[in-house]
Amino acid sequence: MINSVNFNPNVQNIKKLSFKSARPLELKSDVFVKSNKTKFEEAKELARQKTLEHVNDDGREYGFIFSEDGEVLEEVQGDENKCVFDTEALKKGYMIIHGHPTEVPLSPEDVASLLFSNISSVEAIAPNGRISRMTKTPQTPQYIDEASAINISTKIYRKFLDEFGIDYSVKKEELIEMYKKYLTFNHMSFDDKSDEEILNQMKSIGVYDEDNPEKSYEKLGRMLSFYDMSHSEYNKQHEVIIQNNELIKNTIATPLGVRLINEALTEIADEYNLEYESNME
Image (cartoon, rainbow, N blue to C red):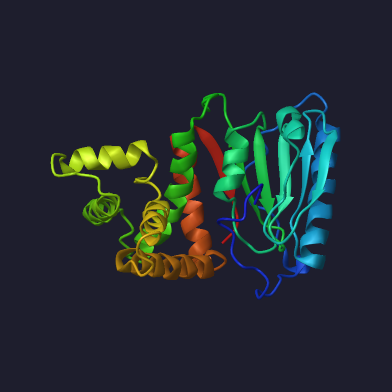
């Protein structure tokens, strides 16, 4: 994962896979056709080899950013969850190659690093040598807004929610009632307002976020806890969210988790005219 730890599994207790178990890649032919192809291809292979050594030896992420002619712009040693690349290298770079300590495909943060920079391709390598790679095409949008970034994250997350039958939608009625309690504590009238007007007011102050129910409940809960430390609606909902997140986290680095992530990444590629390849399973 690049730049964030939010969606990565806890890898400390997962047995590392042996580099010797790597099988030949069965990906499509490379999309890179450059005038200095030999140097570029050699740089990629060396980066993959060094990345594999690191993820197998110490279980930490390791990554490279290349220019179009194969020059290494940055080489980064990360931790078990992330690699943090320099902003300038992301602006000048052409391709990212980095290792994941477990066989988990590209994360939402990896895809965002591709779409919100000049990078043309991002690749993740598992300890067994398998690869997950996303590449821009001439049809990929040049500008991606914040809503698209949220869409990328939620699309992967909702794959898991749907698989486990988890209803994780924001319950507007509950949030409205919570907000009315907050207004009551502050001696503010809401009798003349419709539920839709109250909801719009919540949106305007950043409390209601339909794409992020955890944030909605958490913000309202904090506002209410100032007056009522035992606010039951917030505590109950927060416990459910924590349990669901734990279930998803423990599934990510399993064959089921890899399949769900690959399915979501394929849908994202179709939506944004990207090319996605993976032999992780």
